[in-house]
Length: 101
Image 1: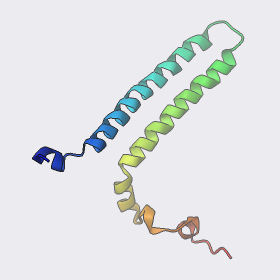
Image 2 (image 1 turned 30 degrees about the horizontal axis):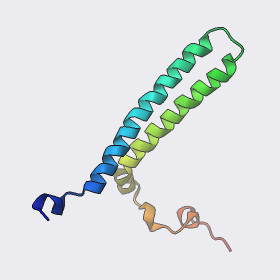
Image 3 (image 1 turned 90 degrees about the horizontal axis):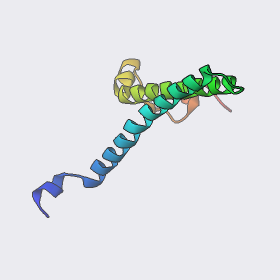
């Protein structure tokens, strides 16, 4: 075993690369689909309302994915600022201080 493979994790690198490529192509593709649905919904046709709802659904999904990504990246900072860790509690009863019998 050479020195490079002793400290370099090839499996983790491949997982990060594949995940990055999938997310890096999926989010812009979903945005492009939302834009194209907007163009189709603006034209004449019987499916305008359905296409508009689908368009806003795609944009809502993108917004939720971006928000989840930002919260995931900032989770340590948020946990530090609010004063408790996610792994400090056993269930929702501990979070809200509920006494379930």
